[in-house]
Length: 184
Image (cartoon, rainbow, N blue to C red; front, side, top):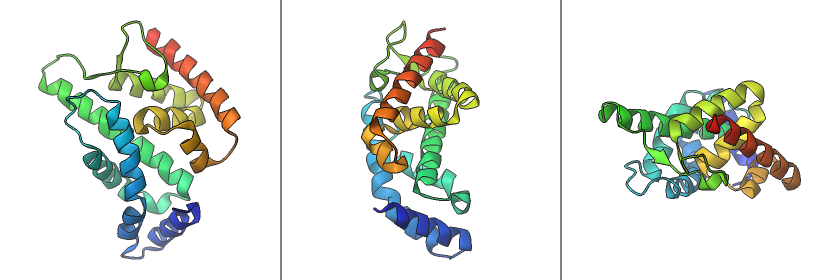
């Protein structure tokens, strides 16, 4: 899908066209589903959340704000945040159901960083990303794309544009920042 198509559909949602939210969902569903499937492959094998459910829940959370989203990059950034919130809520709910048991653990293989225990939990990563967002919102978005959505650096460049080399340098810094934050 062309970036202009998503931008056009977002404008239609903003104008209040009745069928625009449905057309937007239809236009982005396959790409969001692909992102969710890539992310869920990195989760623990017994995870109860399926990629389609992740997409649907994230889209429901996005639907109210779709009219305020400006373009494709803004939309997918908001989708990454929505998927993050769904995964964090799911992890917190699972923890609550266990009455204080261990939080669902996920490896950081995608980050190519290992914590001292070899893995970390979704809530800890979420909290670290929230802290990073206070310092550098762009790096926080990059981490959301990579960790919570499972996008490759090349896919992120397609969404946001820019140089792959620059994005790789920023990713190296973000990984080091996360390692330091999660290690402490």
